[in-house]
Length: 278
Ligand SMILES: NC(=O)c1ccc[n+]([C@@H]2O[C@H](COP(=O)([O-])OP(=O)(O)OC[C@H]3O[C@@H](n4cnc5c(N)ncnc54)[C@H](OP(=O)(O)O)[C@@H]3O)[C@@H](O)[C@H]2O)c1
Image 1 (cartoon, rainbow, N blue to C red):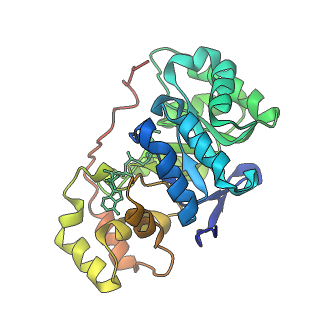
Image 2: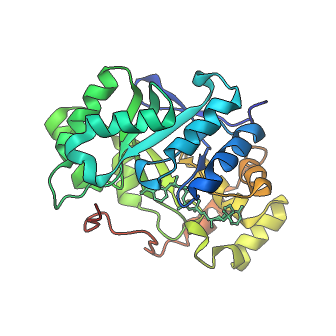
């Protein structure tokens, strides 16, 4: 099995993460092993899962049966909201399901400011990282004040913030804060979850035609050129190839500006300030 030619991005403290992976949110457990096995066979080396996705065990089976060396696959999982007060135990459950003795990246899934438990969870993740069982630690769906609290209270800056980010929701102020603090951005929903009219917009179709690419590839390339880490979800083999075929062309500044101009403040996921699901 040959890896796809996907560049790495260096996180704080030197951890290398493939800039492109595959995400398995809303991939049924019954389908997950096959989707991840196909992704690894096609050449993906970065899988994004979470305890809440209910498919860590299937991700683990696919990795175990791939024949790949552990160090050749980058695995991210996330601490679920209900477990913020018992992060060390929840992390061990995730490791067991994944059949791994360490992950490459462990994230707090949501800030849940209404419960006030994220800081304690962050301290637990710092201990996990110190034990060597997570090469890097970070957060997801954190706003500026949530990030600032962790930094102020612990002095430990998250390696990444995984946030909803796509052409219709560009999070510029948050992205700038992350850039200033050396926090890499992982853009979830990079294709706006396929829920918008993005791929039918005439300007985007024109840019796609000019490069001989699909509108989805243009949007993914727009992320790549801004140094974001992405893991578009697909259960279709042909789209695994399509979504990885991003590294042999470049968008011009004018083309990037067209997509920048799609900012509309439109989010498809929950508001991190009020999302209280447990
Ligand atoms: N931290 C968080 O709170 C959070 C929240 C959401 C997601 N995530 C992570 O981010 C990953 C990606 O986000 P997402 O799954 O929400 O949304 P996404 O990747 O933006 O969109 C996935 C949707 O786009 C479709 N799609 C994929 N490739 C396509 C292509 N080339 N052309 C047209 N349509 C395409 C997929 O359909 P098919 O499957 O039919 O191809 C699916 O319906 C997740 O899997 C998960 O790992 C994290």
